[in-house]
Length: 82
Length: 494
Image (tube, rainbow over all chains, first blue to last red; front, side):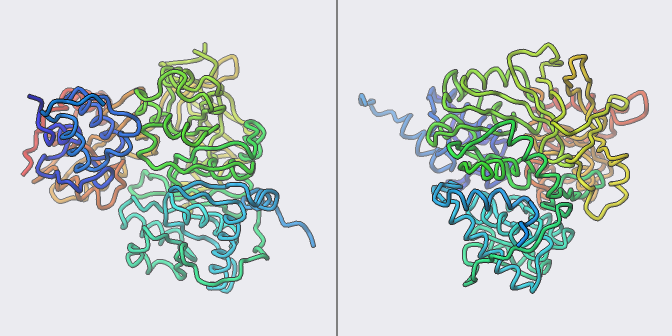
């Protein structure tokens, strides 16, 4: 069972998990800067076994968007060939 | 009619006259032609000059990576003024202090910063909304500009606890642009990156090297810099210029051959490692990689080195800084690099004392330790003081320490660069003595006056600072403590 998303994000950004909400976004707090965004993307890739594309790295900039992205990619439903 | 004296605006206006329909700027998905750039700048200049009833001396540009940020810069120059970039990402208190100290005649805002206008309105006479400047006949008779007057005024981190202003004249800037214009020979077919905040003087290279050549400037959002190949390829960029940190952060996303269209890859602002140069060169195999060097006081860059694989002069894994640009002279005094010549700033804004200390006999004392090799190539060794570069931003630890010491209970503070990757500091860790209630409260207090890159990521309380044999704070030991205690939080967070 992978680590809960809130914990992954909080660790990468070095913030309290309680500080996370769907509207939190890149550059809205000092902690979510370019350095920590790169750390966050790497953590997401490692934790959930994903490959995050260049296109995704520039769009996964809101906690809510990241949450939806991870939910969609870690769904327990049988994966359909795409 | 005598031709007007050449100044920083001259090349841009000439490009606008030669190819009015060519794209000058792409920002936030909008393309702006040279004709539109010049026209909008002339309208802003008219608004400024008419409101003042005279040419302007200094105009603040309170906008970032928006049409107004670029148009406003040229508009300020057309009004006869020096432009003074103000960063919307910085705490408003810092911006207000800069606006006051710069003695601005006018300030140009965009729709992002207009809501913050009330906080700084008291500091300036004329406020102009760059998106809606009102009905003005575009200025045609530009106020004359003395080549030795300021073209721009930038604030950089100061050792006395507050930012210091560095003024650069038209003559300073034109020397750089002439030398580098010949070196890179950009053409109207070039497409150039714009990665630097305008409060960083390397942005002056971006805007004016590009526009003097009639090429097109592509403003990048900070997030886009994390995937450079995506942006470079989507827009067909031919010239890249950034801090090395951008390449370090994007290292996993620039595989070999991923940016074949680049013909120039320039880096400046902090040490460039051999590894980063090699990786970028592989990613952009058709480009020439250059390492530029220079503090704000010497106008953008004053040394350059062309990467051609591992240099014999490379020390500590760092690419050499090369040789002084044409027309500049360099001396090494007790290992410290002094640079003189036509790019040397006239000094610090309204600060004769610091000017006298740092500008000596026509040279600027850089505070950088270097060695000159028998080949004439110079290598950077480090600082003579504690100045840091955080992601390329120049940071005086004393400024951070001063802010922390003003907080209740804090008796002493020392800031160091940490973590360090590829010879570059990625953040700040601060050590404090005294009694503090909450690490987060201290950080929040620092964030109200310091830009984000200067706010310590971690604050560690110590009973006393470790001292070295000379009785000074042992920063090397603090670095070791930071490395050892990364996961430890000695101060309970309420």
